[in-house]
Image 1 (cartoon, helix red, strand yellow):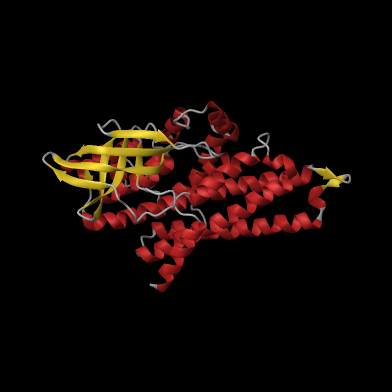
Image 2 (cartoon, rainbow, N blue to C red):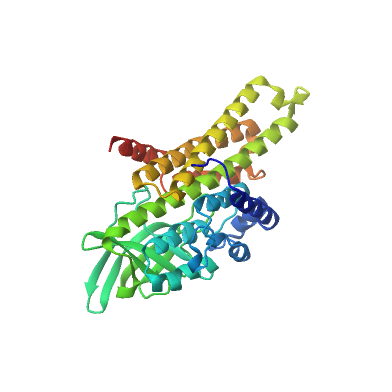
Length: 375
């Protein structure tokens, strides 16, 4: 189990660093926020990501994937965090792509997975029904009808749900969780924007008596729970990688400020108290990185579900805690200017706060880890 990147993974990281640094710096995210568009990401950037092969990183070669594993995708997400680059990579690839690869039949993979890999099809996972993350609580219902099935329910916090081509909807059929593919233009589907502080594309999606055919149901009842657990773990790890990248960039920015900001005719970084606080941040950053690398290694090694879940919850919890410390210290060390819109500190802080909550906050993952230890 490796806690360092391979040569291929380093190449992916460096390609992400180069592309995002050139066409999607933090200033681009600021401009997107100020433009207040519903999509909240740059279509040209998304096209470039697909052309670079990032949408193909974790998938099997037979469907056009690169089979680099999820650690390779995680390397890209660290750079997404560094630059605050908004894209549907988490929602369409990490969440929906992994589900279709796990559950889809050959026809569904040929049609939907290849579309996701090419970037021509954007799919959003409609799963959560509460503002408090609880993936096991689902009330949306899939009921048999003369024409197949009908779907009814409401989903919240659907990442990149506005403008998506289709949704993968988690619903109950005969008390069992199932997954169904719903084109966004289907009769009975409505979307509403949910404004969060990071200005990303988050939606509330309602399904009112939506007609569903048999071939739109993905996977069987037995394997759906396992596939959902895997996709949530994959996405939580990718989100943790984004948190790491954002925290690392914020820490670097703060160190630079300590070197240039002067009080009493000397840089404030020369004050021992601030040096100690910066050192503590660095230690936490490195510790969190080790849990992240371990989580991706466990996912890619296909070990048992319980071990994977423990590794992922540990990484997301530790990353949440570390990001909380570094973001608070960044604001405090910058002083009053740290909370103004003039600096990028505030943009990082807002994205970090949403990412900490998304796919399970610290309390959720701490509780999950403890439960897994007791099993």
